[in-house]
Image (cartoon, rainbow, N blue to C red; front, side):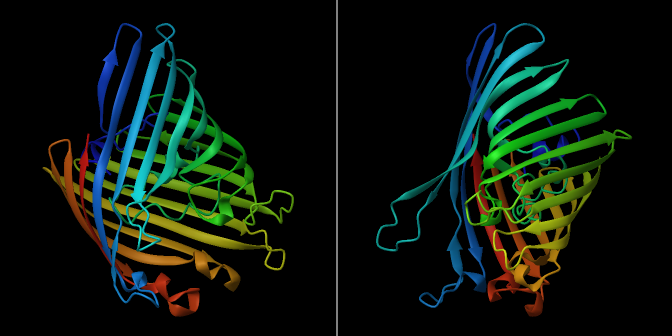
Length: 350
């Protein structure tokens, strides 16, 4: 989350762009921007301990680099392209820590019209992301409940998305084929679609509804689908005078490729309440996911989080967050799901 994003929380764009970027080329018809971030993060939790290493500290640092461009065809229509990669250190081998892991966050292109909306294809946000971003505003602990369906996950590949918005109305629809998301194995090699609509009933209040569906191919083989992942959502947010309060509810069914388990119903909720004053932000978040069948306990979560962030101009941010885990042992598949955690970070965006 950026301070500028908080101020513009109810004015989301129809396509994803860099939150911080510099123009490196511009003429009468074309613009090329480049940006990114260097973010050092430290996480402290008993969940980080292993049988081989009794250390509660884990480094979560990352680098993001992005480049995007626009070429105007005329006063109404433009062609766009955007890509962003994330780089982290590979810590899987303690004897060779200089290796890096690369992750594609965005890689898409398309056409936008001020009259008719935007049509883009590639690795990008789903239509659902517009609503889940209502509550995914914390620096650390927010926006996790939508990661178990490829059509609701924040980002996925092979996504064709249409977005249209006016001053008050936003409509988005997306479809994907043989798509992988940035979430869990449940969301791999899936076909699906999603559609959302949101309306600003006042300058401060926006309400939204959505539905998304994908088949279930957790084994990574789309020849053996065992059902559908169906997700319904309702979202609302209020933003005024530095106050941002938002809630997202999700419900439906979730499936895996394990035919002995098939599918289960679930309920989920994501809450955000934050206050920005000067260059400071304090927020409280709550994440909840509950699957009915015990075989899906590895997906369950219940936690409340406290965070403080301090912004130094447009580039530097420091923050700290504490997660109080409320999930009981009986609703968890592993001990790590029930552990508290602390995370601190320093980000420089450019």
